[in-house]
Length: 466
Ligand code: FAD
Ligand code: AMP
Image (tube, rainbow, N blue to C red; front, side, top):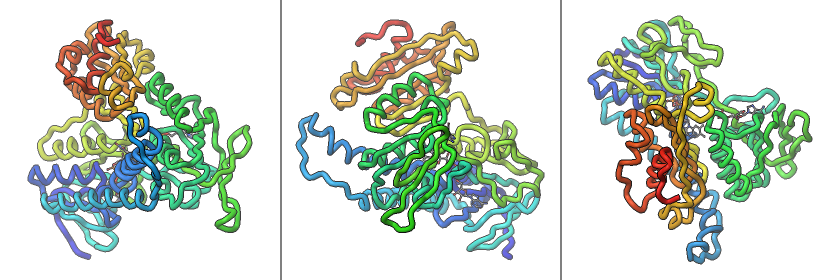
């Protein structure tokens, strides 16, 4: 077996791993990255953020062309879905970006190994696959990410009953799609297939959608999704799902729900969360024990054991690509320079439905539970000139500010381009800004961002246009 030596080896090339590798190389370390599949970029680029957004954008355009162009004076005829073409657009988008990571590795002289990485002991990782090597490195960064969580009784056959990866590539538009779980993945992919013509039923165990998000915003979202034709069954605990039928023609799925009639459908998307992925990683060789939820415990510097670090979905915190990237940078800056930091109070979360939903900081429920006195400013997109011009007036911006200091504590947006609007308030929270700071900053007219400014003015009861 080939013996190799590097300063730092990263296991996994998702947004956590590849960003950590590039940053470490920028800081002058000799870096290797081990990835078991041929393409670089991890869940996010291959089967997560990027392909789902490609389908969300394309399906929304199709839906708009069919339903809302006429409202703005455009007549279109013969609009047709070319599903294979849409799937090709998604695949091209993914290919371009995964190739882009390979280019960045070359540019930064990150040595890529293709194979499964397993820690053999302190300072040693074995690569097992197309390449076989024993790598010695002072620092090991684990960035092995996560995989779809299963549900007892749900028999995933990797086709009719599958997770998000299958739902990114259905070969035909399902007549009836049942989505289990009303988190962001279920709602995004449920929206894609609804727009393309499926009947979509979302089964959710809790009495609300988007658990963890601001409740008022989640309720507004549910109303909007209902208008779009998504059918919700809340308080529905799924206890099983199976494929029935012996030929392609009569194959269908049966979903069992506690205390209710079983539901027959064409396909099932299981979206009840993701679990950290640490299979065959050799953690025991360096004395790492997983926590009760299968995550690698780390200290404030992402250290899991002497010389071993972990970042991204495989550790605690929101399973988001930008959180993994920020941790990757902080982790290797800590290794190379002695200091690295992630502000977990200022990590935005976005649901890329239509309209988008975006949040940063505390929810009203969290502030109430902590007994924090706060003031609230809200402003609707319906009173914004740009939103009217776009013909997209649904939604609002809500800003929550500390009652005593006016510091911005949380912002919750549902509306057009909410995912882009959240950047401004994320910076505000990062800088410890007050709602007055936002209200007194000039916002270009006519932009959607003016809704943020008006919501900031509304914290003090002085919104102008409402
Ligand atoms: P991953 O991206 O999971 O990468 C881990 C990599 O490690 C994989 O490539 C895997 O093959 C490799 N690996 C694992 N074990 C080994 C081993 N032993 N040896 C070698 N290689 C190994 N997040 C967002 O922020 N925005 C979104 O819009 C968004 N949309 C999503 C949509 C879907 C459908 C899904 C499933 C996820 C989405 N996410 C989104 C979440 C996001 O993809 C993850 O949070 C992110 O990919 C985590 O990055 P990571 O680097 O920790 O791990
Ligand atoms: P997330 O963790 O954000 O991906 O969301 C997963 C969703 O699935 C949560 O809202 C869970 O409440 C929901 N969920 C988990 N188990 C079940 C179940 N057995 N039946 C229906 N919904 C479930």
